[in-house]
Image (cartoon, rainbow, N blue to C red):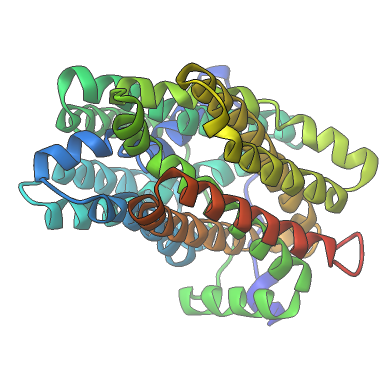
Length: 404
């Protein structure tokens, strides 16, 4: 096992990265990961186009998240074995093709297939972040990786805002065509400005996958972190995958308004980096408990919606979105801190395992959320999200040691 994890080659000494290169890396991460969230505010418009039911529409974000989970597990390890510069270009072109296929989809089945491929190829974002870490000088590594991660986070948060507006005023297909163009441009730009990146290991691809199984089996801290974060992802995805449908049905609001709710999430999630400093003070495991508690409380607050006027209900939903997005992101930061200390030379594979479970949770949340909305309306979605967050909190509370 140790050979599979540590058999590596010495990378070339990193050179200082210009601000332009760092910005391009951040933009690449953001535009790539945004692709898996564009559909969420536009589900109502898509449903009208294809005359599809709520449960059928829920399969669009569900398959996208499932594709991302599978792509992280099967494709992310390739970055340890091959030149990431070439991987970024190839996967970027494949992502562009999948986005175009979505835009030209003539049936719901074609849209579902393209959504799955979008998820798999959007994992190019998980190649860009370690590329930044590899190329950055040690003295600047934290700052540069933080900048690229900020770009990734902004891509997630603004994707819903942009797609909601574009979908409402120009049609949902236009959003996918625009996304395809931006992904192609940023992929080519990255390929042109990045140097060749020497692979970090010489072991075979099957050995890389085998090493991931060994890591999973031997580290309880990793399993606990993945399970707890995966449960939070169920709650997170159940909300965002059904919000546009609920706002359209209950409040008669369009996709532009649904997308604008992403700004509420931004207010919470952008505050999450403070969790890193808090983790240094009280320990990351404690932060996971606080974060899961915040998520549970934020969702439970929405049980009070019937007590308010329509304007008050929308305000409460915004407050809840700020709270649970902060809790989810803070818990993720703390969980990454926990697992990165396990096997430093295998951090990319540890990260891949964590995010595989996270996006399995995302896929499950999208499917369960749409089913809950169809059968029990918004109260069912709120109940699902609250129970998933409570289960995550229980996983963290029953941790035997604070370093778990």
